[in-house]
Image (cartoon, rainbow, N blue to C red; front, side, top):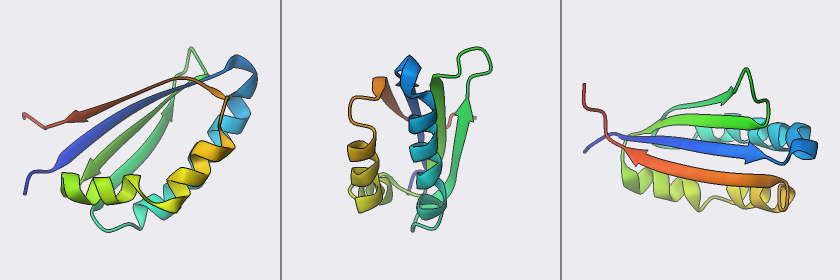
Length: 96
């Protein structure tokens, strides 16, 4: 099995930063307890507080996909509907 690294960039609408941050933080404990989660770390840009980054490592792509289908992510999407300006996700493999 190949470990999967995920880098997710979330940019909140300027007037919704606190809401998005609160909802992102809610994801952490539940996700860290999921099967296959190696780490799930949330970062906030020092110069642009609307920019958040999740740096994640998963035991496999299949286990990450299970995570992506879980209810707590659906709840996040509902709670932040209209509050996220931009979202990008990169599936990556560690080289060294």
